[in-house]
Amino acid sequence: MPDLTVQLDALFKQLKKLGKQYHELLDENAELSQKLSLLQNREEQQEHKLKLMEAELNSLRVAQGMLSRQDDVKLAKAKIGTLVREIDRCIALLNE
Image 1: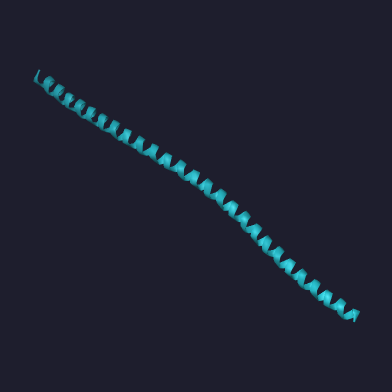
Image 2: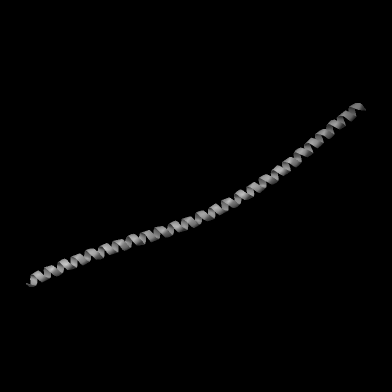
């Protein structure tokens, strides 16, 4: 009978130890789940920011392209104006 009591006591101690470990693991699991949720939210926010920044970058590229085209147009107009003045001078010299 004493052996049975010792064995039961040992079994109850193991059971308590397992119960404690189980609750610790439940707490850890809850904490890790919360951290995972937080990290997933951050990831979603970062992806949203990235999409906004990519859209802004595309807009800036388009604007830069338009500006460079406008500069090209201005330069071309200036060259044409210079050529027209030279042609006018040549015509004036021929008319003399």
